[in-house]
Length: 516
Image 1 (cartoon, rainbow, N blue to C red):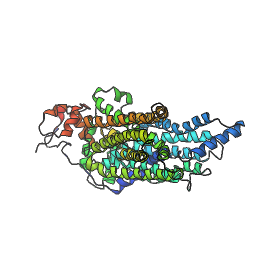
Image 2: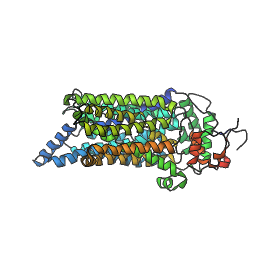
Image 3: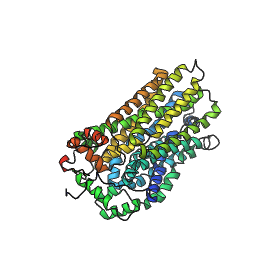
Image 4: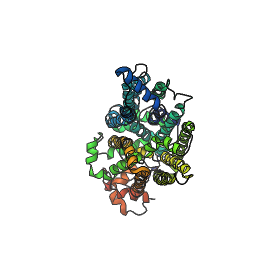
């Protein structure tokens, strides 16, 4: 490396929020990520109507009512098969993004939504519960793809100083999707016996808007340059997203990253897991993605109504109280979006998991004493709201951002496969195990979630450094520059990263740090 060339750890490659950046963030999140939140909550309010449909169909086919046990199993399958589809979708991410690109994968996966919407929308007309279950499975596949691809796409098109803000946009829209399902599920709107198929099929509307407009924007510049070696398309994409004609510094930074890779070919999951130099990065992805779901947030969402009922909230008012919690989710998500670039990733994710752990312990105390102390019923409601707010402010979206930030271009798809698969597997595990855990441990079951939340918070505090306002190449340089530990004046966050002995793709002797 020439002496006159500055290391990119000393360069200020930042950018401003342009209309194309904001538009792509909103479109990709609105038509993909929001559907995940919507499908999490959409089956809650019409659950009795769906069960009645299953029972009536069974009677028409076989001349007898469906027993309560098989009916519960059939409905549980309808709910949980969404997570199984998500697991399958996350496994397809690596192949899809390598072949079609980031934006291409978002667009080409959208037909799954229309197929699922048609199946669920016409299920009652055709008298087929199987269509509801199959539709849930297919929309799960789409959500499994979207939960990994959209953060990857936004992370690669964003300037380093906006990567956290734009990267949390999908999690904000997930909260918005939950809120929309809660509002539309009210009895005055679509939460009725004659409208629940339409309620389930409305997922096609956001996706239609997305595919009508997203194709007019370019794909990820990093994908175009590093994976496809298309310099002209890369320049056009950067000029579009950055709003600047001169994008030389950004191109040069990406070329430095391309040269640092031992291979520009996308590595497989097996190659990723077998690389000993990536141990801490892989372990970190496993911990934060599994912790996101094992924090108990899905159990809290699922049992919110029963907790409110135990707290003395009238049954007729519970749906509206639930809508209130959805509004709190959005407010917490907005706080996370607008503070992540000022506070950094670590404070939000450590604070979020710690607060969730505290509230899980609080729910345990409230449930144990609510029979003897009247006001403990209301404390349990406050702790439920606290868990949801703590989750949405950081843990809801930051694991996906950090998964992309800890890996270089060739390793990023495989990292998202690992993180996404474990995320969905943990989601399914909580939904399957929690009822049995609640029966065996009672109120103390929430202490399991408390332990998980506190463990993740402690792990992030001691292991994962701050990646705010750093390029992917800078993060990789810090992982690989083990010998630079002895250099004076190194920032504490850089030293924490170096201690992890990450990539090893660059020899430390090849790195140059600018001296004042």
